[in-house]
Length: 557
Image (tube, rainbow, N blue to C red; front, top):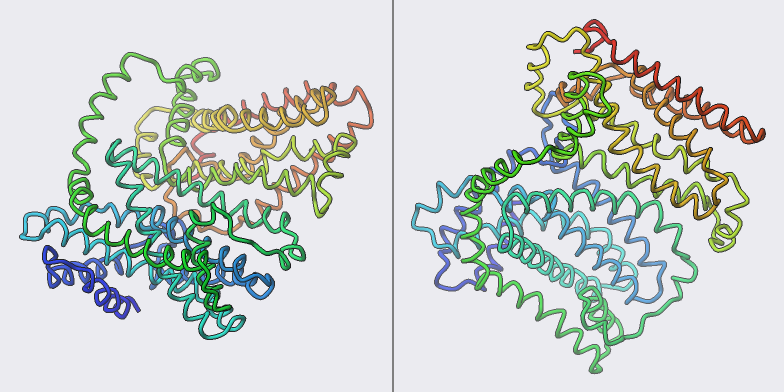
């Protein structure tokens, strides 16, 4: 399919080209990039790879995009106002395409491996830039088809042929806007910052995108009243002229109703000219500067590295200060500091784990409001309920997943250093990593939830939260005992494709359920919660001691 799309994109691109761009060289570069792209293992699929390499890595992602498009397109026949439904559709397409560029395609967009081959050749910066742009457009059009296929089909069915054809046109214009916005973002970051900062921003976008989808699919359907939304209409206000999805929606409304007044003509003008103009700006003005920045990537990293090393010599890292206070021996301090630094630097861990922390807000919303639509009444009655128990134990539902995540890393081969040292009790490395999880993730999350609970339930729940903290730690250590004991970041990610996970999840839910149930029963006796606090604390101490005394026979390899 990409070959057909490439021919279409080259045909469109040739119309806008100037003499500075060599079309034949552009075509060769674009075809070569696509050939390499077919052999590339996409970032989104890396974590799901087994030892056998899949035959088509992109197909699974395209199917997921189709499903998301089907979910959004269901609004088209429900919402009577075409402006509302088409605004949602085009906003969704704009967001998906921009996020796909920023997250999944960033490795190709900012790829510098071909600089050494192409830049010494007689290829102009504009030709090189447009070749990159063509490559990206071909890639994005595949995802555009997946994202917009069902919305376009529903548009044809609901509004007829003319509106359906116009919808195809407006979606293509929306894709052009997403490309421009992405290049503009990258250009601004590269102008005022370094390559490493750009990578950090991309990682942040990946995490934000994952969190957005996770929270959106749980919270947004509960907030919308479909019956009211179906009969809602949106007039044209002054701010409408600054929102691209509304341009496209009003254009389609004009096609449907044959509206030709000044507001709609203005919207049509903006919807057509702005995307085409931004596309021309990219080719004409952004090409030289962006190509130079791309070719310079990798040079500034060495300069900043030496400065950072010199600055690091003058201060003790925060993780080392904590490890000296919290850890019992040098081995445990090493496990604590390693896990602290790796969880802050490893992009794979952050993408997998940080969204699960954000999911705590989703769970809190679901457990507190449940299926109630009267949010005001539920919130007013909240202090009279025992819902704070859910809030107390929410952290362990998600943070417990980190026990497995900190065992795996793509650079697992570096774990040979563990076996090169005369460690009698390697369990101290694991206990150090567990203490890191508690200090870095459990306690901050509990403090945030405690602040919310204090606002709702007042001081009456202080002893419950203290007991809950120790119980959360107790559950974390018990789960570490149940799971196989791996040294931190010592296992190949493919090992995660193992059996028995379902049983582990069931055991985890049973343990959490038992402790939550006991805590609920303890609420019936006013002094029992305070009495259980030292018992839970002593249990945490003895279980930690057990982990610290793990021998090599207990460690899984």
